[in-house]
Image 1 (tube, rainbow over the protein chains, first blue to last red):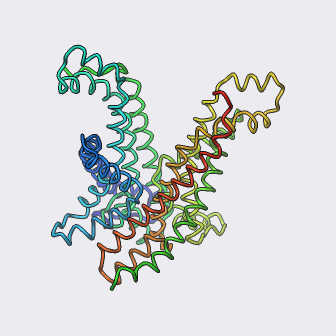
Image 2: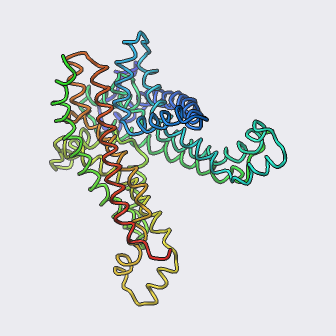
Image 3: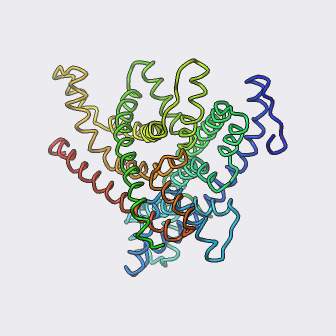
Amino acid sequence: MFFGIEWDTSSQWAFAVSIFPILLHGLVITLEATVVGFFIALALGLVLAALKSAPTRFIRWPAKLLTEFIRDTPLLIQLFFLFYVLPEFGLTLPAFLTGALALGVQYSAYTSEVYRGGLEAVASGQREAARALNLAPARTFTHIILPQAIPRIIPALGNYLVSIMKDVPVLGVVTVLEMLGVARIIGDRTGGYLIPLTMVGGIYLILTIIASLGVRYLDTHLPKRGLSLK
Amino acid sequence: MEWTSYLAPLAQGAWVTAQLTVYSTILGGLFAFAFGLGKLSHNPLLKGFSVAYIEIFRGTSLLVQLFWIYFALPILGQAIGLDLRFPPVAAGVAALALNIGAYGAEVVRGAVQAVPREQYEAATALNFTGRKRLWRITLPQAIPEMMPTFGNLAVQNLKDTALVSLISLGDMAFRAEQIRNFTQDSVTVYTLVLFMYFGMALVVTACMKLLERYVGRWRAAGR
């Protein structure tokens, strides 16, 4: 029994059908961790991107080094680091939040590059034209640069959302009961790993296929020449 | 305990991590070429198999694949009368290579498709056989284009090796966890390990850059 739901080991099919709602409980946690981690990554990535385009190199270089460091070290170690180190500084977060924070930190390195790449891809003539028309820098950014950068940024961010979802099982090591962790517990208790693990793989496959179709839809339907922000 | 006393066990773990990275990256590279070219094949069976492989291993989580190979495959083997129990090293290398190979296969496919059509037409006009066209025309032009992404994938693979510690393989992440359990000195251990992974990633990046420069010579002159 798990999450108050009994499993039925009378036959393989009955077993698969009976554990499906249990896995869905885990799936909810997986999706929650994905969304929370994604929003942390969006926010931290923005901070990193801003630091990397700071006017002085004494901020720019450390920010670039930090991005490289985060990107080149494993999520698992970063997760353990946060899990064991934060409490020593008096910050004890629930395992779920620590996990989401680790996902957010790891992916902030990627999202910061997405922002930067998206902004830099706007043709330099656009900036020059805005200057020639005497637009204020703030107005140039919000009305000229951003509307053209966003259609490039959003699909790339969507791809990282899918990557985050595939990394959520790592959070199982700090006792977050996401879908794979739930499947393992079912396997431990019944000795039948094959069916729960295969079902988790199947659910993941369905989710990522749906998500990739969504990203592709965004990619083709966002106006290429810029988005009106009005 | 002094932090220097952690270095010996961590170095042992680093050696395991390095070996896992090298083996699974090479094996993954082979999968990438086999299935990337397979996806472009005109043979529907070969094409279908390659597409299924790429979708399954890109569409599910690496940890799911690792656990499936390590925990579920032996049970499946039992059911069909085969011994599919693998030691953790084999399961780890297989999962890492299959996973990174699927990502690599898409890179190979993209780079091969990016070779200009005229190149194929010229090869056909010169009466090249299919195999000669692949080895002499397509791959020498496509491989240099794959290298930057392959470099990223190799670093990705190094980071992913940390996950094999979860099937109790004695890599760097596993040693770190052991030392932490023993000394409770988490800050030092994990800071040290983060920097060791970073150092290894820099080495992997440098090696891939060297390789990139080497294969860069294959680019057709004058392009």
